[in-house]
Image 1 (cartoon, rainbow, N blue to C red):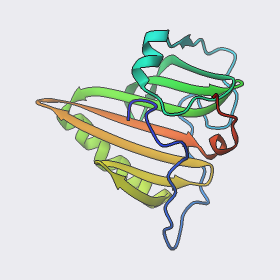
Image 2 (image 1 turned 90 degrees about the vertical axis):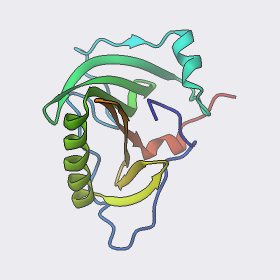
Image 3 (image 1 turned 30 degrees about the vertical axis):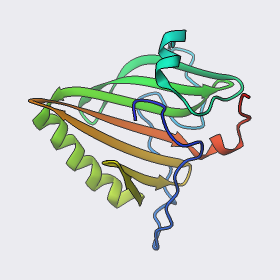
Amino acid sequence: MWPFKSTSKPVKSRTAGSREGNDCFPVGPYALDSRLPTTVQLRPFTEAELIALDRDVTFVGELVAWAPPVQFEDLEWNVVLGLVNGVIYKISLQFNGARAKVGHFHRYFAIRCNRDFSVGPNIGGAQIWDAKNGNICVDGRNLGGEAIVTVTLTSNAIAGYPRET
């Protein structure tokens, strides 16, 4: 799931009693469907990094770039952004750390998302929640005493973005 391998459209569940009235939360200075603050400096992915993503879809006017790390839920996260014509359509966060710290985040965050958003499918261990403006996907992996957790927010707006051929 890090950071852009996915289906061409956001996954949407059909949960009764939906909480899709809530928008995805901002992460530091980054928010879906908004322009990047002018103070944020990005480092575009290299050609090799883009190839390694093995993306199924690319968009006209797309930029995939490393952004400065952010503090989110008391952890420092690596950040990759997807933008189309300067508008953020994807925020992908990754934290590597002690297994206990990652586990604590994962449990707490799942409780928060279950409360605030409509629960979507669990695909290969990755949990998805639906929001009004997109979806949230959380995936974690244990690596001995260490672990990795990835949080990805994807905008529903991508359904209308022209794709490169």
